[in-house]
Picture 1 (cartoon, rainbow over the protein chains, first blue to last red):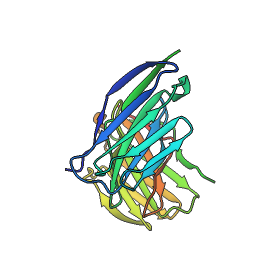
Picture 2: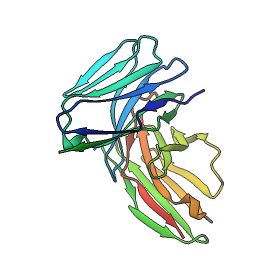
Picture 3: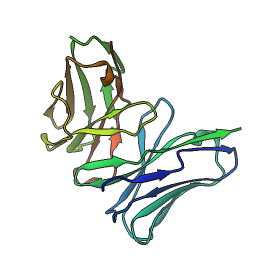
Picture 4: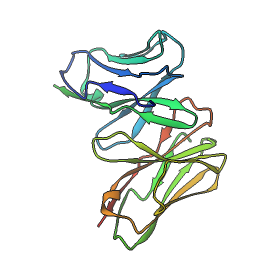
Length: 109
Length: 112
């Protein structure tokens, strides 16, 4: 019902390669949020997407919200070692935030 | 101030102890949250306070007791915890009609 499915679970990339994580819902989302958690750290809010088909960029990060508002993706261009961590999508309803399982990104230098 | 602070950073307690976790924010946010996070898992919502009133309790056992003394402070009182309650406890804040939550660094709790 309220869950969001996130894939892949893990991704190991060579530094300089691209990375993408996907978030899918069986129901229409009012919005989707993305967070990054470094190893040993806490979740840090990256962005919120609200509009159907929305695309937002933050430097090397590109966030997309699907036309049907049932899926979202985060793409990192030319990964760097500073990108390591777990990337979570999260759906919000009411005051509740429900996180996807997260994608762990490891970058080999 | 764009920070959420939490104390203590680490806590080790026995199953008969009573302890409290503290959270503070000065961003003027009127919603505050407690989450529990186990290793390699996403944060799980425990409680939500909106305008200093408890608005959501995600069926959390009564050995966890939240308190919101004012709009900047959030406490989590712990009593008679179990070893399986060992986890990272995260506090977060946001505006009630959100746009993203700001998390504190967390308290890493170990129950012996």
